[in-house]
Image (cartoon, rainbow, N blue to C red):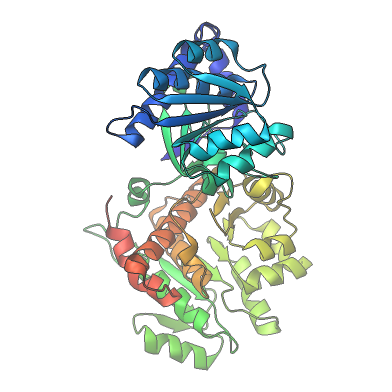
Amino acid sequence: MISAYGIAEVIAAEHAHAGELESGVLMERASTGLASEILRMLAGSVVGTRVVIAVGSGNNGGDALFAGSLLARRGMRVDAIGTTSAVHQAGLAAMRRAGGRFTVWNAAGSRALVDDADVIIDGLVGIGATGALRGAAAEIVLILNEARGIRVAVDLPSGVDADTGQVFGAAFDADLTVTFGVFKPGHLIAPGKALAGEVRLIDIGIAGALGEPAVRAMRQGDVAVVTPGPGFDDHKYRRGVVGVAAGSDDYPGAALLCVGAALRGHAGMVQYLDRAEGIARMVVAQYPEAVASPRMDAPRVTAWVCGPGFVPGDRDHDAVEACLRTSVPVVLDAGALAMLADSVRLQDLLRERGAVTILTPHDGEFARLGGVVEGVGRLGAALAMARQRDVVVVLKGPGTVIAAPDGTCFVDVEGGPVLATAGSGDVLSGIIGALLAQSQARGDIRGVSDAARFAAAGCWLHGRAGNLAGEEGQPVTASSLIDSLGRAMTTRD
């Protein structure tokens, strides 16, 4: 599991090591780790390698300057460019003693240095910076991003908000980010994640002073724990039964995609809600192992997926209402979310539910439900809605975020742009529904944090299926996601 910590938590942990902070031990560990990662990246002889370090006035610049001194001692040609002459003085002195040079930013002369550099180090602002870059820092970043050299960010790319991943203007576009102590949310959450490049973590000795992470990201091993597969004494009902209410005359394929994904998601059985005879026949013809039934009160169903392919109208509205009246976990997706946004009655039923509900909106559906990303970022917005509506929110998009009302949060780092294809969301809802049905049957859902964990695992599997379907460059469709889902559930890193 990757755990990322908010900046207030990181600063508190550093202050818990006040002696090491004041003596410069933490900075020494950080700068040594930074220099080591750059040397590892370059490999071979580094003598004569041209390094440009862009620094501001804070400790982030100090880390970069001390690292520059270590690189200069290895025979590299190091030039530091400051936004001001008032940079970290001890770091500057160390770099100069090692043979490095320092100038204050000027557009003409500094650009020539940047253009010739083999390695560019961004030490402009630290993790405590908020808002858009200003003044010389904003100018420098634009020049750095045009350079041909390898771009390395110190702790976090300048211009990325460490707590939210938001970018408010110019931001450094890194090939490599070397971060210290712990991951920060901005490394994992879009759009910051895309600007961080590869992220390498340096242990500086503060982990023991940390509390709860702000957000987590699952790895394959974490997903394997929550998707163990059938036990030796399992039967289909102990593996969970997914009820699927999906598809319409306009979008019959949504039912096929959702049912197919649920079947591949390790559930013991899928029961399709027979609301339209033609669609039910299609589902059973495609998947004869699925059972079609008109019953919403089916006693064996342990989780419902409701909404893929739904359109406005009494028939689909009644299905959403019936799902919300059940006492098992429910995943609301697509058309069900549009109906929820427009119906006070459905909103009242949602509030009154005793079981877990998971909403899976994309950005447009999220806004229609009243979600506001501006100012707080995707994770903060998802968490606000989760608390307001007492649901688990899966806000889909680049770096899907998952938030529960108790504060449990995940971000998916496995999925990529290949998932941006029609029907992909129908597949995701089927996967999450299958995992919920299994966990409910096993008695593993004890609260919203468990539901969020299973939703995060579903997002990871969805992303891994996309990566497998798209290997060797072939185009990815929603159907190919289903075809790859079995491999996604059995692959081991």
